[in-house]
Amino acid sequence: MYVRQNQKNLTSAQKKRFTAAVIELKRNGTYDALVRTHDKYFVPDRDRKLRVGHMSPSFFPWHRCYLLEFERRLQSVDSGVTIPYWDWTADNSPASSLWADDFMGGTGRESDRQVMTGPFAYARGNWTVTVGLTEAHFLTRNLGRPQNPISLPTAAELQWALDDPVYDSAPWDSTAEGGGFRNKLEGWSAPKSEKWRNHNKVHQWIGGHMTGGTSPNDPVFWLHHAFVDLLWDRWQQKHPGAGYLPAAPLELGDLQRGRVIAADETMPPWDVSPREMLGHQGLYRYE
Image 1 (cartoon, rainbow, N blue to C red):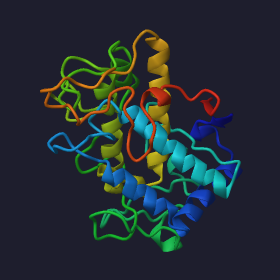
Image 2 (image 1 turned 60 degrees about the vertical axis):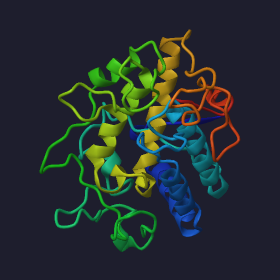
Image 3 (image 1 turned 90 degrees about the horizontal axis):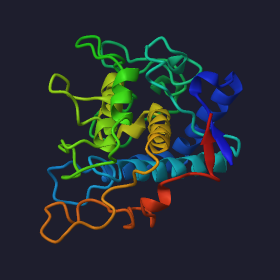
Image 4 (image 1 turned 45 degrees about the horizontal axis):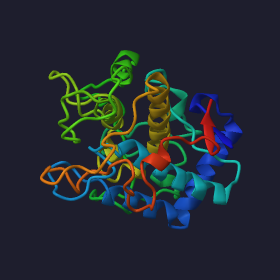
């Protein structure tokens, strides 16, 4: 059993070990293969294909599997490394230590959004973006989107999602209006005055490479999703009687049949079901 820590509590040595392991995965090709996996399973509502990673009930268990795969790869480089998490309701400014030169580096420069600081700056020679639709080979960010400001989710916005006692609801996509923790935390379900909330809003606040299917090109992706994973734990503790939905495959004739994953169906590219991912006891814990 290992521990995932709040990034703000990491020592300088822990930050260095984490970034060094990430850079080694980039060097040996493992990292870009993981980015391609995320992009492949970034399937929007309008597609008729299976939706497993996003806009669907399996958002949480799929990303838990994905983070575990990344973490195992990191530990093959350095057995003492784990994924830290970033609480964006507390460390909610471009001045937070997360964005310092010794960790994630800061925002992009105004002219082209290129990240110029930190270990993932293109000029350092360790981080060339090769996966995605952008022509830029350098990592891009636009923290807070100054030209059209956006703020990170507040504790109240997060609580709004955590308070919903239902895991998810029909039609099991980004339009699910009948309530549901998954859609509220993923961030499609938002008041009419807002386009995004929670998880999605964080991607938009960071900007640059974090805004599309190839968002893991930015290593802060993993810290964001470790916090999302922790929040799933919090929701389960708050609503112990509520389980994963849909529990059984959808009925014949349901337009979403074959497009969303039920509790005991397996999630590609892994041979693992959501039910098998409902807990992580014995693997890791958060502190």
